[in-house]
Structures are given as structure tokens and as C-alpha cells.
Image 1 (cartoon, rainbow, N blue to C red):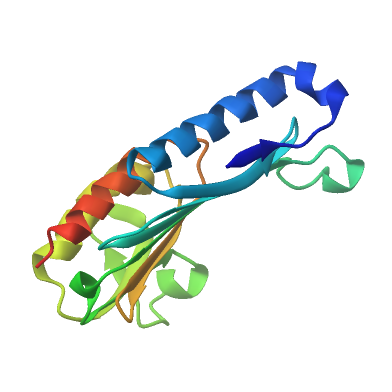
Image 2 (image 1 turned 135 degrees about the vertical axis):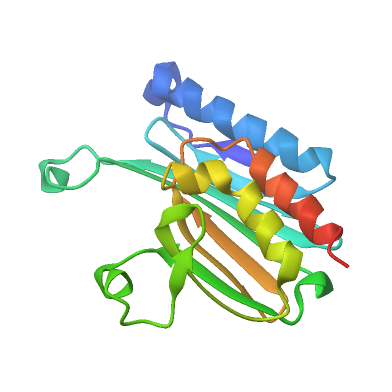
Length: 184
């Protein structure tokens, strides 16, 4: 269960209400799949994790922090993160890493190659991949286009995805879950 941080003065804040709404929606979505949820929220932040048993085993995490001190003046004042992790035998023999392009990638000094239709990203892959990778990239199309993907890796039957986004709906995450389930 996701719990409110019990500070009475914060409960009247519109930020508290918005964070509460995000967390309750997240909790309800995880419970739709008979999953378990933990976490907490307040006016300035939230952190929650959900776990759905089965194949694939799924662990979804969402996090938001708002910084207001002067020390953060030169940095982004809002930190948002979604992490999706899947464990399934359907991912065995697939080794992939997708990340944002860095300077060494742009000049060709790494083992990564450009990801088709995603000019800000590079990919390193080995093992069996085929149609699965194409379908996966299609599911991530809007996230890639908006430059929200931080990283994606598949190794040892585990896929980990990190996304910087204010969209915590889990729609794309559940589409990927279905894709993995059907990857025989």
C-alpha cells in the first residue's frame, strides 16, 4: 500500500493532491494484475514500487522529487523517473543495450551503432534478436521520439528500462509486458 507522509499542512496543497492521484492510479493499475505495491508520497515527492508475479515477473517503480533550494539553481528542479524491470525465460539469449548518444558514440569510438528511427540513441546487441527487437523499439517509439528513454538493457533473461517522464500511466510498460509474454 502506498501511504501519505503525514504532515497536516501539506495535505491542503494542490501538489499533495496531484501526487496522491498519481500514486493511487499507480496502485490501482498494479492491483488490476493482482500485484503488490509499497511506497509513500507527500506534497514535494513520491516513491512507489509495484510487483506483478508471473511470467514475466514485473517490477515497476515511479519516483518524483521537487527541489526548491538555491543550491539547485543550475540544475533541473524536478526529478522524475520510471523504472520497469521484467524477468522471463522468453528473454534468454537476447543481449541488448540502448542508451542516449554521447560524444564518443557520435564519432564512432564505441561498439554501439545508431538505432534506426531514433537519432538520439545507439544500440549494442548480440544473441538472438530478430523481430522481437523491432517490435520492442516500435512500442518505445513515442518515448524515443520525446528523448525520455534513459537506458534499456536485456541480459541474463532480465530487461531493465529507465524512463524520464511525467507520464506514470504504465500503458507502454504493460504493452512491453505483453510483448515479452508472447515472445516464444
